[in-house]
Amino acid sequence: MSRPTIAFAGMTHLGLLSAAAAAERGFPVVAFDPDPARLDPLRRGEAPVVEPGLPELLAKNRGRLSFTSAPADLAGCDVVYVAPDVLTDDAGVSDLGPIRALIDAVDPALAPDAVLVVLSQVPPGFTRSLRRPAARRFYQVETLIFGRAVERALHPERFILGCADPQGPLPRPLAEFLRAFECPVLPMRYESAELAKISINMCLVASISAANTLAEVCEKVGADWAEIVPALRLDKRIGPHAYLAPGLGIAGGNPERDLATFCGLADAHGTDAGVVRAWIANSRHRRDWALTQVHERVLARTPDPTLAVLGLAYKQDTASTKNSPSLGLLAALAPFAVRVYDPVVPPRPEFHPRLVKAASALEACAGADAIVILTPWGEFRELRAEAIASRLRGRTVIDPYAVLDAQACRAAGLDYCTLGAPC
View 1 (cartoon, rainbow, N blue to C red):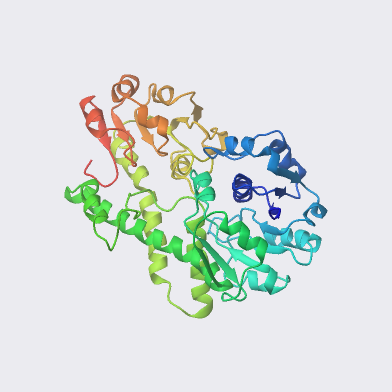
View 2: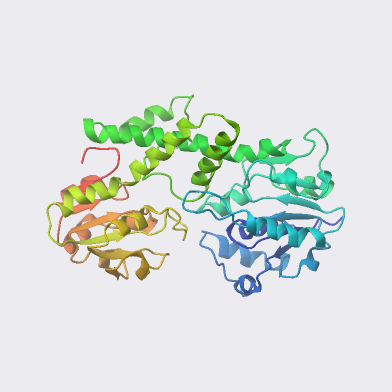
């Protein structure tokens, strides 16, 4: 018996990664997007998003992937995932208009027995409101993590599946597709699955907020958070995989979206969201750490300084700048000259009025009074402290994510500062 044909509608980050993973698992895949221009680079074998391993995955599976902007081409598909990225505004509120429009374009073209699965992140109640018959309508929690999306798509920890009847059998094509990934399948009611994704991110935010709060105290009392973390990882109540690395607040889009969604739900139903709002406030407070260090160590001591900023993406291995600490810092430093380098994200004039684009990290350091490393790219870890010191005019290194070796920097005569430790 031939394998079911799987389709993914929406060729942005989530849909494209999911389609490539399905093809790698041996299924024929139809990749649909209503915008033909979005498909042109894919037909040429180009990956329009930055993800390690994605170009190779697409090239390997070209024979199983077909790209189309015609809804009629979905008529022969057994399972159709609706998987566009859901954009958020500056307050983290989702714009559900585009996904509703995409479902309205796709659903009428499907065969009556085809299975429709919403993969994009939506609030509780969304999937139940759709018109497709309940037995053929599902919600699946997405597992996308920018920079690790290929790994997560190919080897998911589990599938969380929202169903009309969690106790009933799954349609054969969907069950066969999910079994191919050899991981647990957790069926539950639609609203539970939709809230499960929010729950995961809220628990992550709680861990991150605790780490940031404690790391800030470490900086003031002479403790070193990096020395404390191993003790926490050995505690079974916290564990080896806990999010304990301090950071510059909540970056990216999904955690912020989920906090905003939860606050909206709490307000609508009269439940308490005070701790969630405290996490949001903590995130905004911690996001100013780099700016505070720049003010204390550079602006207060050096008239009209030049700063080198390494990294624009909100984290390594992605081109996304959503809630990027770097862009926030650049906006706050508008009166001062900055030299900027990122290996993936091109600096743009709208980021800063006095921005100078550098061709490399060391070129960005040339003549600068301080260096601020705001994305922990792998290539930045290869920088030698002596090389940085020889190019800087000043001595200040602000390295929140501990990309560089602190001892080597201090041995090279640099004034080194990182999160969670006395500077």
